[in-house]
Amino acid sequence: MTALLTPVVAGETRPAARPRMWPSRRYTRQVARLRRMVGQPVYIVELTFNGLSIGAVFHGEPRVLLDVVDFPRPAPSDGLYPHMLVLDDGRGINLGRIARVTRHRAYDPRAADILYEDRALARELLYSKSRLTPRRIAHIARRQLRALLGPATGESKNLPSRKDGQHE
Image 1 (cartoon, one colour):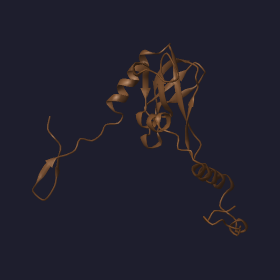
Image 2 (cartoon, helix red, strand yellow; image 1 turned 60 degrees about the vertical axis):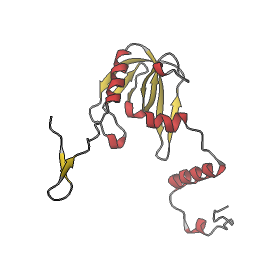
Image 3 (cartoon, one colour; image 1 turned 90 degrees about the vertical axis):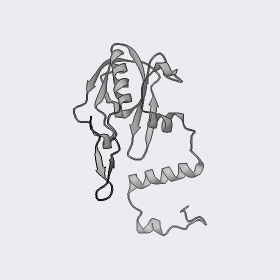
């Protein structure tokens, strides 16, 4: 196998960095593990997107995994992975919309019980400390209201302000 070479300066070359493969080998191993669980109950932590934030939903009750099928139009930039799970409740969920799949228990699973886990999402949503301070909650509420109600009108711009620059 020959190494890819990239020019550094005119006349010089060096080995190119190996491009990252998508999906990763870890993802491929996890999909194989999921396929071995077809017909068995699994616990899923599903992601929800509302346009402003991402949340994790712990269903707490098992679903029977009916199949792991290829997803026809994966798009990594949109969070759509190459596979989806078909569940006994009639849903098909793309793996890009799942933070974790476990067997035996929904909460606090042992490492051996984790069949699939999006580590980055799990670290951010499931294992990190809550960062909901009164200031953060107010910021999120303002963003959501702005998204629902649209830009501020001239009337609301002229409301009296507090010392910190926020409207009352």
